[in-house]
Amino acid sequence: VERAVYDAANAEPSLRFPARIGLARISNGQLTGIPPEEAEKWVALIRDAGTAYGEFVPVSPLVASMASSAANRRDDTVIDRIRIGAARQHVDAVLVYEVVEARRDRGTVLSLADLTIIGSFLVPSRAIEGQATANAILIDVRNGHPYGTATSTAQQTGFVVNSGSGAKASDLADQAAVEAVGKLTADVGKMVAWLKSELDTRELVTLRDQQRRPAPGPVRRVSR
Image (cartoon, rainbow, N blue to C red; front, side, top):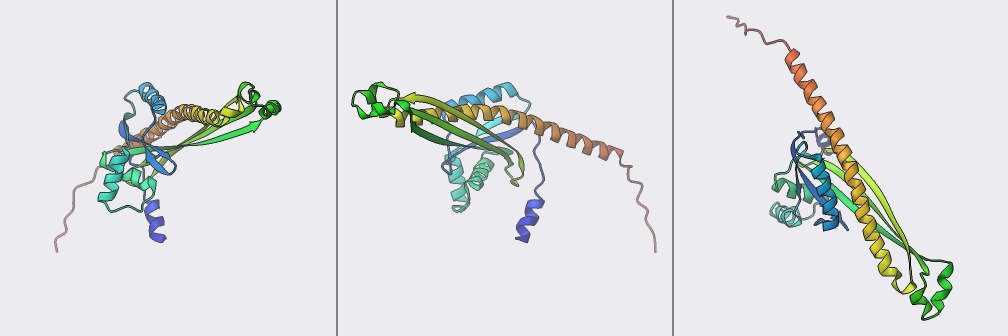
């Protein structure tokens, strides 16, 4: 434990902008590809950011799996595998995000129509709700140093006839997930902008301190 704490304390930020930043999505505890609807949200963020932050690279689940297997790290956590895969893709830091969906289906005052065959197909008798939460963390690939986090939530509601409530609730949850990721990208953009400002300031202060140090004098040799 002491060694683990010592290593964690020695993890210092090494990120410099512009950087090569990986983008990794977790679903059900596994690294997955990024759905097209969510990819559009990230592309919009990257387009708005321009080249100030550098290059964003999706972390390939296949590359991560192959790199982990080659390193004989089959029992590592998903974050460890993401870092190994990102390292194989020569990424400086990786933004890991996860979307969790929830569905709720409840009867309304019109649910008495469920008792009839025709009514169950004609009357919007069930209130349904889809919720999603999206979380993200930006970590250093080499030492695991966390640079920042972001989170967002979204909710979609509607009414549907009893016979289609399950599928509709799933659709609403999917829509909420895309909306949550859209909000998350905005929060990530703010977080990265703040991080770049902090790192630039720290680097400037370090440079000034180095310039203020007196130049070393001549080496004095003593003969015996």
